[in-house]
Amino acid sequence: MTIESITQELVQHLFDYRDGELYWRVKPSNKVRIHIGQKAGTLNIRGYFSTKINRKLYFNHRLIFLMHYGYLPDYLDHIDGNRVNNKVENLREATLSQNQHNRKLSKNNTSGVKGVSWQKNKWRVQIRVNDKLKSFGSYNDLELAEIVAQEVRTKYHGAFANHG
Image (cartoon, rainbow, N blue to C red; front, top):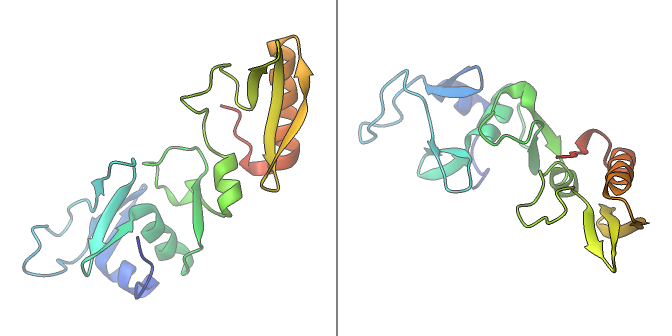
């Protein structure tokens, strides 16, 4: 995805925004098989909607952010973690690290608790703080480890803490 040569004015000219969706306001060219009023974008393999403009592919959530705020940050975060919920109030500027903090529980997680793993016959709590993996102790009880993990995520990740 690229951010070159795309402007707020162009996005506002091409699209209408309604409830987290973009709809074509104008037909971008005679060769394109879209209709005015048609929903813009296709769902890609990574779970994001993307739309082609001038032969370049853009994520819809980035176009929506640009349309409303007039600039494109390096990273955007879906507050609720849902990649298809592109409502402007669900999008926020983030750093790469903050974006990672808001990720959901990994499919490879074996404890069922984000930031908790089984090591040396105990539940170990580890989270990333300032891009470094930091340990917050080992516990006999999974429920206690979960409470500790949630507390340190809230403390260190703030508004980007995602406990699920």
